[in-house]
Image (cartoon, rainbow, N blue to C red):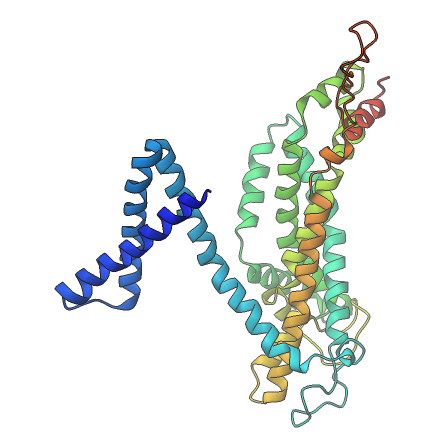
Length: 379
């Protein structure tokens, strides 16, 4: 966007505000401030479109107006996000100390300061519960994604409908399902099926599995069909092509899907209320006894009347926010496009060389695709 475009945009904004002020403040009794700015925004878009149309024509004007509208929507979405993150940082940072990561709530009372005790038991519980859920969900979700994308079975349609239905299922339903089918009928005879981290991992896996499945399926659709055809042309079976060509090519996307699934489930609270139940002391055994997690830690303390406990809850929220943000950053790093870095440099012939002695251009190719073809049995 040039300086002239910015000047036209600023002039359109000033004209819009002035026109709305004249209409609503001088000629009429006026409206509320929210309605004033909404009307002023749409008037600004109209004035900016007319000014751009006079300069660059219809297509250029539409492009500029759509760019402004999309940028405005991004700012509107970012405002509550930045406000929420800033609020949690401001509230949780005063109560967050290094001791939070090495102590539990043993011996802590509501009258003690917010810096007393810690959330080590909640951090350990979250890691164990989400890790176990990933252990159940990743193989099943990946197998389902490969089945939906690589097979030609007639069962793909009902399986896809089932996955889509599970994707929209409220997370609390998974907790109620585990509670009703495993904990209530089996808790009296076997402690494994009572309130513990294992039951929580089963509930979390029910909502993690469709997330991982859909993410991996999207990645598999991005694998070029030419790689599959090349592997089949070399005499490899379809299963061999999937294992040796498709899976290595999509391995980065599979890792990204796993991290996104972890980030999705790390903040779930509702399923844990009926499965893990929560416990203020350290319980490193997820298969025996109630176990705490960061979402339960936050839920438990922010509902109390004690100011110190509420601050502890905000400290736990800040730790959970940092954990999820770190996971998303790792997912972005793993899933970034490395095709540019993997391409071999193209050597062009020098001007002094003759056509007979000039070196031919090297064809750009990625190491991932060539390695996948060799894995299928190619040269």
